[in-house]
Image (tube, rainbow, N blue to C red):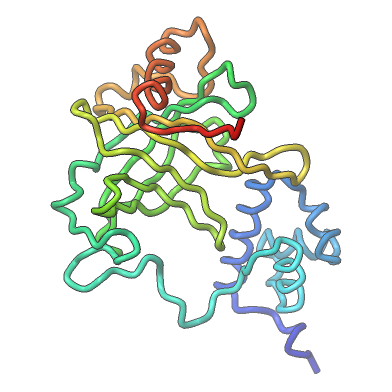
Length: 258
């Protein structure tokens, strides 16, 4: 007789778990063999489950959860996040805003920050902010990233009191956040990015960097440079000026403790 821990999980739940594990492997830059060793399961068992040739069992899932330090299983009654507030408003924890009040934020943005690998270089990608009818919230999604495995998407918080805008990613309790000021007269938003920088092996280190979101029209996208931008590249100086404004114009303050 098969025990409860050895029973295979439902197919849809198993697929969801496999997707979450693949995302974690890419984000943390760890191998499947490393995860199998940490979870004390065979690499064959892991490979078959990730490929869909075999469903995850409860025992295997629990071991992988302990190895990754996250919960992969969702309760059957779990509802999509974030939950919409009554009356078509965003939830209170995102600012209780209605779409007309935040429609000025919708659009496509050239997103600029220093490169984590070499701070002499700049890193450019695209961020789209759009209204999500299902959750009655603004959401954002990144694209045009060289490191596509780290592409982010999440919710936009627009509280009335602080006058700032927050682009928040929450994956199993792990947060990545952008905090920017209200748009300038030209529509740019300047602030900081706080995230985890991937190092050697499974090492992750907290990092904060200046960031700029510059509005772009659809017709402009083809003429923009994305990826790593080096000194001497056509767009470098213009991109650099946007990042420099974060500190020079007082959009953010970096304290060193010195």
